[in-house]
Amino acid sequence: MLDIYTIIFLALAVFIFVRLRSVLGQRTGRERPPYDPYSRDTARPPQPASDKVVPLPERPVTPPGAAAPVDDVPPAYRWEGVAEEGSATAAALDEIARIEPDFDAKHFLVGARAAYEMIVTAFAAGDRRALKDLLAKDVYDGFVAAIADRESRRETMESRFVAIEQAELQEVTVRDRNAQLTVRFVSKLISVTHGADGAVVDGSPDTVADVTDVWTFARDLGTRDPNWKLVATEAAQ
Image (tube, rainbow, N blue to C red; front, side, top):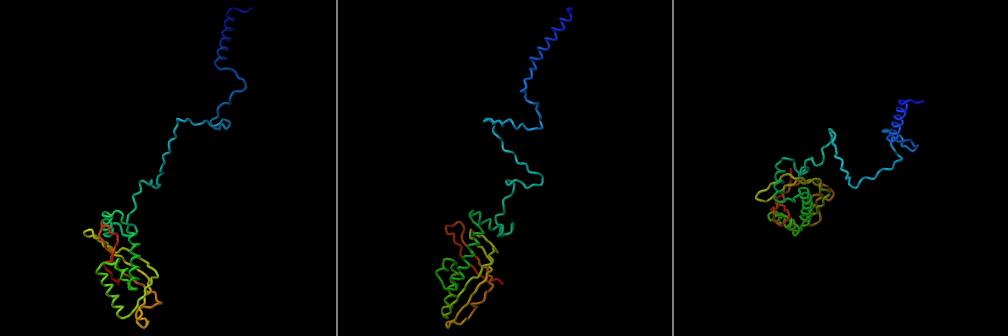
């Protein structure tokens, strides 16, 4: 015989069992295994990213002692390889660039090399027409006088460059927008002068001579004429 208290306890146990079953559910054999944070779930395909998620670029981190970002690197010295920074030559080049921002000293030296070779060979050949466009009037007059003197003796001259080994700026000045750039040329040259009878009167056709010349080119800045002209020559000691 069950007394009233036993019946109450049995009813309470059944009630508790039913509530737990509804809350916890029951095992069917198809449950997912417990989550393991140290293993990768390779069976589950990757989920596509939402269209509303925009990935942000990673911010570069500069480790201690590493080079600074490119934006923090100061600009290169403009006259590198042409003039020493802080020198009077560099200051004069800055003044030229202030008046003519496109001025390029290295490009000028390339042109000076070409002009040097053209003038030397034109003088040897007596080519007055070629010299006229490259020389200032007083220098042209001096070259023409030397050519005429040579021709009066019926002498001929031949000059041939083996190499122009160096062309470097020696001095730069700017006065009243007139720029003068002095260039020191070091070259190897074969030069010979023949007399009227063909005999060698100066130089040698078989000897390569080391020649150093200091020439000054000039032009007025800010004008339409881009040509530099030779205004002075001297042989270096």
